[in-house]
Length: 217
Image 1 (cartoon, one colour):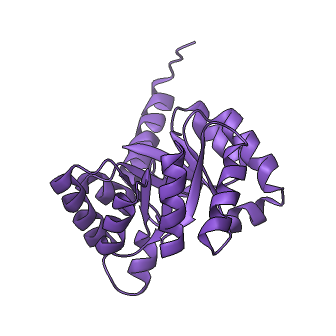
Image 2: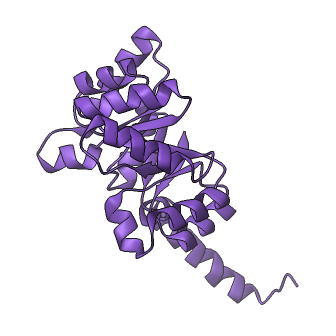
């Protein structure tokens, strides 16, 4: 499974990238706003740091405007992945940009039917939003499972990019089902290391070592 980091925080991306934990980055207008920087500037810096896809999102509503914005964003770096919404206009933009050889991430997916349309439109990635489905008392993992089955049935090459990740269990469950990629905030990825039995074991080892009176160096 590939790990994408959902942030525009350069320091957080670099920390995880140095450990080999970053295969790509996803951003959106909210994350760009939170960074306090211009989209072109922060996207270029991320692209220089990360070899994998870096999603930069269009904000237009009409297909022709999305295409123009997508082409503009794609000029920032070769690894920019243009992010478009799952609307008819977004799918039109996806088709054009894909045909031009650009990577496209179709975002805000909430149904298997939408995911099927995105694959037909040539999306590089489809981003089903797990957490937001959980928020309205639906199981986001059911959607991941449905998309996986449909894509496998017909050999679609669109990668399932599980998004709106809220918990470590979301990551593990998405991996078990067979999502190709997850994108999560740095804090969630770092939380994956935590387990109370690991902490308890380390505390016991530390106490016993101190009682032994030994040193390694």
